[in-house]
Image 1 (spheres, helix red, strand yellow):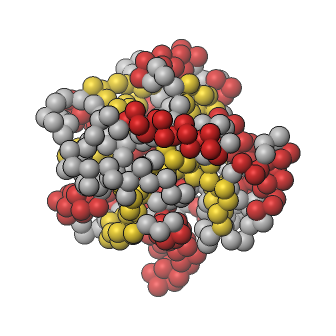
Image 2: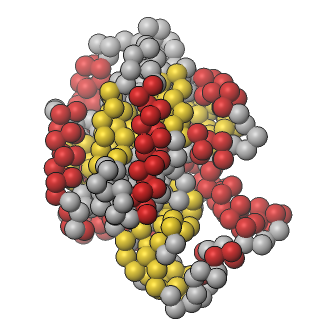
Image 3: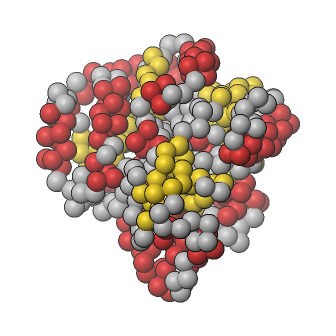
Length: 439
């Protein structure tokens, strides 16, 4: 099985190699549609919210089976045999995969904390060690709750292990690590592999306090070797920071605007932009907010140029119909399919929400939280949630045209959408290079 994976990957790499970089020794951050050596997937068993996504993991594994090797990541506290037994129960041979245990609080989001590989045409790889935003965000959240800063820093320190995942995996595989002062989650990195990068201006400046656009650009030139910067507008309304109110009576869980929810490259010159059309914008306040934000980015993109001075091909991808469910406000820090603890909300909102109230939780649903692999594209489906068949058919038509040689695989990502993520968040590609060293 593994030899089959390797042979397929080498064939794909050979095809891509026809388009050589000008200087084979020059490092660059490969686009996500370039060949993959493997895919990281995280898993966890110790907490119920981790076990809830097991069926989601199985769907991804089945979609990738036989085409792209999988490396499973977990915290050292987890019993790997438990997960292997689960795979076996689902008729999936556990010996086909690699398992890595390392200190890792939340292994369900390897996209954001996993290695950011740069490589060159000679087969060399290095890993960029960016800072992860969630630890600082949680500290700020605690301070907003009235906890003094020194204690907030201490209480947020349990997330420190996630800051080291990328460098630990790099060292394990013998790759040099380039440390960066920049806070930059993997779900916020969107490049075309030719020198252009898309950046959420609000997110980058908020999570890199004191930095300027100029200093950020200089650091990205040094680390990712990009030179053309397109600064875009805010992310989706239903992708708020941590757990927060979106509009009165509606809350969600998110990352505060990762690009993988609303704007993606499909190829070096084509940008996919999430979209709300005129006939939908007035149906709900969240739609109206998204309409305004996405139009701002659209106006920016219409004027932007790629690294060669050419305009982008902008393709609008319809947002799924809003998905929400009723939950009851309770005391404390409860968080389940049916309850939300009032402590999650800032003191200023406690007058709006009272224990016993029913409010709506909004899912972080988006067709742009997809994964391109060696021969498939994994996309979320929302038909089972009552989503628009017309919209999903349009998405299917667009992606079939963009990736005519790849199979489209539709996956139910709702369990992770409720937690603020999706297929792309849940995975992390290892780019294939001439160096076939195992990652």
